[in-house]
Length: 448
Image (cartoon, rainbow, N blue to C red; front, side, top):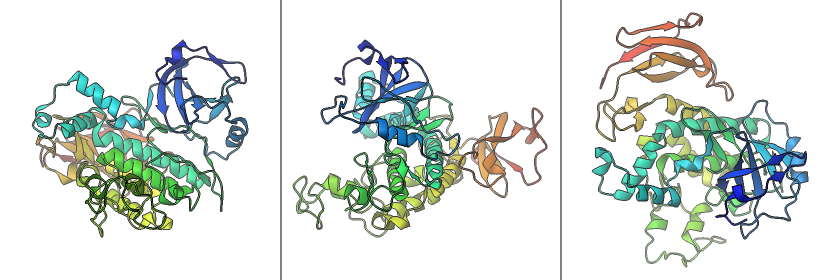
């Protein structure tokens, strides 16, 4: 099928049980296939593609997906598994909640950028004053897609899903912004789709599939197969790109190569390394753009890391892309990502003026537009701490405030509180049991 062809114009597809599925809009497209939403809001269809971008008639999916169905999936885990194979076409039907979009919506890709440029949106004063119009547009898109706060939330939920898969001995295999989905608006749903490559970790062999730019060095070079630690690498790349708006290995060496380093026809940097600088970067032959010991490939674009990542997050980025570049065992497990991303999310506030979010404890005013930091309530226990805007009158206090961090339940509501910032009071509501003594509420005024 031609990419520009309207899927609605095609005949419906029948699955192995005789159900008919009418394709709607295209959701995501990658090297292995294309995902379409169907006219049933909770179902999607994935079809494998051949090298020409057409449905791969030679793909044998039946045995593969029968095996996936037998994997010991953790209960209630939000991973979209095959429900039924298509009958006369290669592909399968899977569950997908309505109103979900891939993490790629956080990226300002070429098409989104062109749409913004054609629309010529009115930029707020803080954006209009940025001399670099490219960066102004990127920040406009960053803000309109939830800024740092929504990205941290999405990534923390995704990390928790992966941590649960790894704890069951499973490898996801192909993490990228096309395979992680988040609900629109205020939805707190995050799902992984495309379970094609999910399997047990193997001592040797096994299929290793990756999205270009996300593959761990050992997978890209073919020296090892996909493992939980290669999942950790791919997730870290996605997290860095999503938060900082740049790839963790596309730095000065790639974007501003010296004459003696060359460009596309540069000499290999070591045995087996490709000549192309981008390929060297993606295969882990070049240093991390924020490497603390080697600045030869330092970053030349993206957002300042201190604005979008806490010290804890910056540390695990360093561990993953520094020592972890060559030593897999040095990469932090997904549990650490889930924990640190949730902590970071809980310490952000949204600026009421420009709608960008920032770490409230680090700034007395918004680092983007200069507006005074809004008032907030610091809710704290011996285990955890969260910041709640002063405008909130009713708040759900999550499980992670009171219990050890849970990959499945950390976001569940444990208590509900009625908050009054003016009176500096907080009470349980709607039959909620009395607050535990260890729970405290601190009321912090504007700019304090």
